[in-house]
Amino acid sequence: MLKNKSIKKKIKIKESIGAKTFLTMLVLLLICCIIIYALVVFFLPKNYRTELENQFSSEFQKLSVVLDNEGYEKNTQIITNFAIHNSAAVTVLNSDHQKVFVINNIAQTGEETIENVEKIGISSEFEYDGEFYTLSAEASLEAVSRSYKILEKIAPLIFSIIFLVSIIGAYICSRYFAKPIEDICNVAKRMTKLDMTWKCNISRSDEMGMLAFSLNEMSEKLYNALTELQEANKQLQVEIKKEKEQEKQRVDFFTAVSHELKTPVTILKGELECMIYKVGKYKDRDKYLYHCMITVKEIEQLINEILLSAQVGTSDIQTMPENIQISGILKNVCDKVKGLAEDKQIRMVVEIEPDVYYFGDGYLLEKAFSNIIDNAISYSPKGATVKVLLNNANLSVENTGIHITQDDLEQIFVPFYRVDKSHNRDTGGSGLGLYIVKTILEHHNLGYSFENTELGMKFKIMFQEESLYN
Image (cartoon, rainbow, N blue to C red; front, side):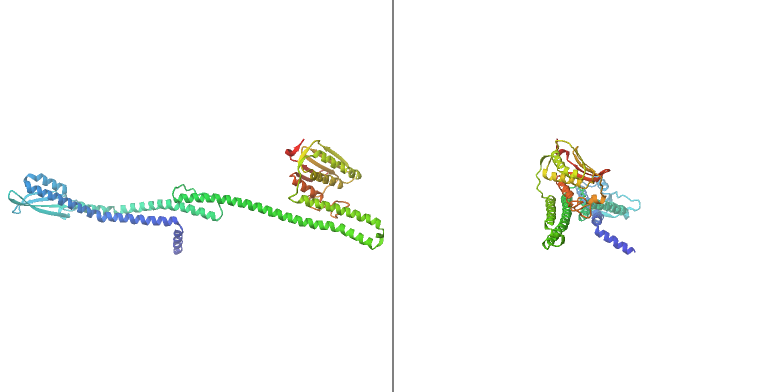
């Protein structure tokens, strides 16, 4: 277990630039401090001893010259000063080796006697008034020994200070150098996940700051590029979906077209064959030629509606917008369907606000209005009321006496969809009328709705007020 923990710690240290920087700086600082301390311990006392010896020897030579010229009796004060300055013991011997002058200024420590203190000695001879003398001096190296002992006593404190300073210095250096790198590495990891919402908050003027600035700039550009790419991708997905829907609509449309044309063509073909072979009642050709003519007109009407549906259903339909009078167009449409309304005993109520103009394609809008009003009359029962109202930027066509289910409402604008599932032309049209209306209104960016009311059904068109003119 302990071995596994140790391995994990080693792996963590290897993977962390901060830990490696900290350990490296700590080791380097410790080595430097230990080397400096060793140099101080081993070379400072030696240099100090050499300096003391050189100083002692130099001053002794000067003293010897003075005594050789003037004798010792006149210069006892100079000898005393030399002994005090160098912590030395000075002895002057005559030619009989008798001590004629002695001074001892070697300091005594608390634990050691003068004899136990390390000393350096030097002697020389000088002549004065024809007599020879011997000058000897001993200097104490107690200061050198004391420096050794002081260094030995404060060594643990020095090592503790060195270790503490090394740790603090290594930590500061590692944070200064490794922390920005760790931040940049974290940012790079987020970049690999395409997360560009970050920013390197490193305000430095060195290479690390330049790298952070470059990353921030690259992040901003990548974010803009990704945003544009995502928007383009969304738009592409919308266009693909729209294209698929249009393709499906085209397939459904042509499938429905083939189905719608197949029935009248089959009827027409059968009647013509029966007339050719004079089968049964079809011997009366004049009567059934008239029926064939009616069927041909139905096919012609269906083909015209299919062509119009195909024309208005394309995105590149050529419209001719102009300032048209909506009021006049609605009046003309209502006048055309009055005969159909009277045949079905349907009461028409027309309330059209005069002089209402709109910027659009007059031919297409007239076709849309005609389909709406014609549907209202065709699907209303006898004795119903059809109300056409134009005011307040809205056009509504309401017919009474009929309702349709919610499912039919959701499918009512689909090509060839009929509420009457039998597709009987006596009870309904081709199923393209409201599809054409929907397509024309969408080309004009007009809002519309078709819903059940208490009395019946209402088709409503919402004009854009800024495009209306009175």
